[in-house]
Length: 157
Image (tube, rainbow, N blue to C red):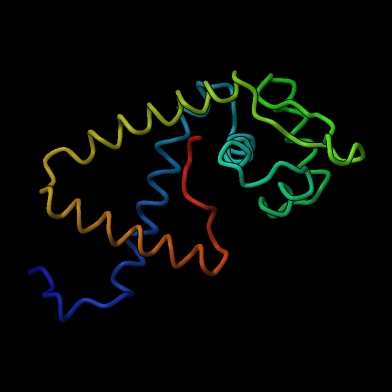
């Protein structure tokens, strides 16, 4: 028998959120591979596209990896033609990272395939439940961003 709203606590959301997170990562994997990427290069490319960082050092901090690990990843993205390095106009000592049109197209294909798949998963769910879930997830994301635990919204520019 389903729990009534009074009997539900915040902890009741933890396992479903972990399950959805795991399912999202699992569902993205084949689309990432089709684009010639690996998870280790997809997420940095995604962070660069949404404007999370433009400097190699900041990208390393965002990813929680060492500078050499980040450099290796960026080297791979450059070889694939998904990212380019350029010198900052303001400070010629600084290197900036830009997602190339090829990289943007690859990300768009990945997210389009994922969105299509997610749309199929949502088919048949009551619109009111979808609306409530969307509001709840937005509130959770906003609180996590306030704590510095999640990137800003806007996965596509």
